[in-house]
Length: 619
Image (cartoon, rainbow, N blue to C red; front, side, top):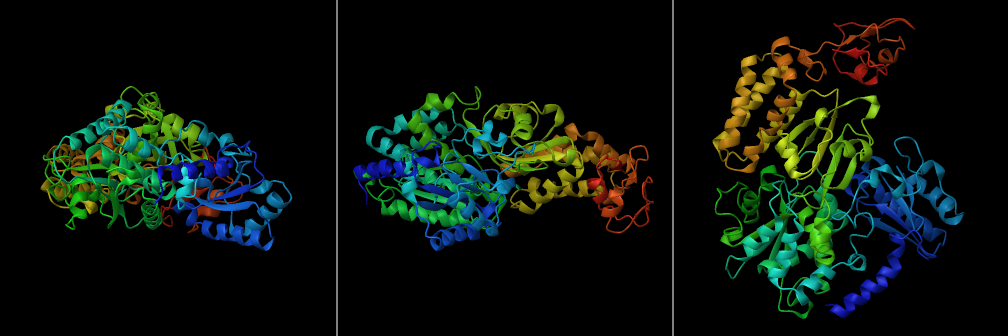
């Protein structure tokens, strides 16, 4: 167990040692080789890269060079990523075979390995993170330690003011003072609903009971979302510290982190972090010599999307089937085992320590009038810079897609972006300049959600997209209420009819009516929001539904039953690229001649459509 004085000494000494991680002008003879150990880079052999670096340094007897595993740097499209500090050299798409060249050229000879240096979208070679457009409009608060510290070393977390906020709270602040600073900051829940965090803490605090609980919702289930996972993998102690602060403020002594078992790296790092915090006396009895005691346990979820709903999550922690409860009563009054329970998601907790240390005014100065702070997004789909981004609330969709995301690949055009996953909606190109905040997204028929942001180009069929999300919600419905259990199934059947060429205009009317009824009658947020992708696509892309129902056409070629691929003779240049790429030799024509498609042979795979540089192929 460490005293406050001992923790302060660790902070000071360790920060001197790690200053080169954040200061490119650090006066250090030591170098740190930072290797991304998030899930994405791990799947591309980053553990092997890390071990190769360690082995080579040992074989070459090179001292004063450390190899550090870190969390996600954010720019997943360039992984595996290796950064060398203090010079801040950014190497992209590194392979285990590149390690020897990096050690010999960079470490021994003092020269950069030019071929591995990261390149921006325009081909410009960048020498550091700050030079990349991807990072220029970002502001990292929840992700501030990801890619900087070793998430498996509590001392490194301490070096960057770790557990300093908890120390401040326990030694100099009352429960009400903590809650007030969270309320004044304006932070809202980052799990999707956007409920004011300080208000939720206050509602739980005022309920009198001898036993209360604090819960972290890490059941991240949206397709394409990996925000919470990356925070847990890159900075698990930030969540533990925030949960302890929350527990003190409401009068709880027990916490649970509900995380899906499909996140093995996150689970492992949480286990390590909890063990280290207990060893240092930061979790357990009489923390920092006070009368406050608090401990945390991990509960693994089996991957049910419905368990992201807070009451279904509580049912699952209790060992029951994950089904939502009827509300009220709310968890603040009647939660885990009938006791008052505070539930926030990972990203919400990751902001708390910074708010305590820097103040409510600092945090509330970021973002918009009603949406304060920053938001983390998992940026995916048809965008060049796929990755994890954190931007101030109010940043426009255009800035995220084009300035940070680097635009749409292959010269295609932006068509829509899906925010909020299966619970969200589509944002069309006419709303590209919409500020990303709770109110603005709601006005245009979408929602913030937990932070998934899927970009789609002009090859995507919006009817097929709506069908994809309905397939997901139908499979994930817990079945407790009839509107969700049966209504979403009927909606999916209509969408399947439209995509197969058997739909009618009457089906579009039925689809809309069903969607509104399900929204109004479902018990929980999953059912109430399940129709959102359909409603928003009907609002902005109704002509595509009509084409499917009346014209029996899918102009994007995604719905194979309605597709007929043709070549526009005026646009065709006779280059033959389509012919070479066709897997079934359905494209005919001689060199320098305009090509034609043999419809009997064509399997409608769309390969020619994707590869044609002149956009001469379509439906």
